[in-house]
Length: 441
Image (cartoon, rainbow, N blue to C red; front, side):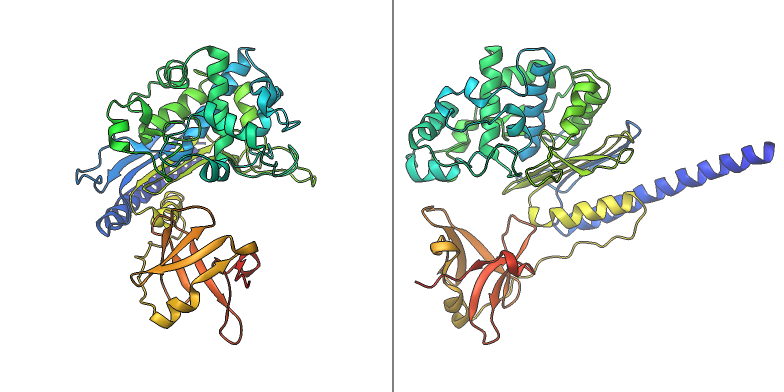
């Protein structure tokens, strides 16, 4: 028996020693990645509810060293907090997840069958209201939720599908949820979240952008790219990796919501084709097997990227907040995850800028997609992509003669050619079936 006890103690020490070595390797790798300007931000790893690794790397856009207390824009990770607020009100009996959307927005009653649960897990079938706003709202005026609803009610854009039929990520629908919180509580959404979620969870470094006194000054004049900047529910929050850990602990310990209610957030809906979806409430279930469940919140933006992965059954947590150089967010996250788990990993590589000839640029310029709704244009030897009817354009940067990337994305794109070298489409690299075909008038 004594021999067995000694053997078990040595095994535990060996495991602990390997874990410490993994964290040393992780620190070394992230230091190199940060020096190469491929990561600026924070990483937190918690195991069994306890922080095992927490460190910041790189510099802010103002040239200051990142600290663990430096808030970073968490983008759509904020949807998880919006979903929490709805679940809290459900738990208190102040609303029902089966409530119809029309109960709160009677003018949108023509979207039949849409319930709050459909909005929470992106199965509402509601159209994304961005296109309606861009085409019909003055580009020099900021938008409110009330004005967006009035515009949609007047123009009645068609639904994408019947509620519950399939999943379609919908940011603007989450803005409706924030307004519902205000209707039910007679409080501003920001005040409610602060009083009922942030303060009870001791999230001292988390705030809404619109709460800052200088936010509007920094925002400047309204334009096509910031019309929704004063609205909340889908994003517009800054936080830290440690604050998001505190939120995870408050959820796990039942401080802000009971586990039995929170578990509803982890249950994807059965879709119209009989398959189970991947979206829960405010996030997605990337691993569904009981005992190994992983619930993930992802926020992607022009200047920041946030990933929060909750290992529900293990009590573990991985938070990666990435500011600047967001095109490296995916390979950096994968390297962090693999090093933590003791698996082989690859260091991210710097992207190259390939020089196209004038002939190549001229060859690629044109209209793509059904009825030419996407345009590739050129100016100053650069290529730009621009949706039809949208005055905003984004540069696409060549990495080879036929492959491209956006500065603020970790996804690669491709110009597709036929056997004769003629352009036939543009789309995600290596996914020809999903390309936008070159449109010929």
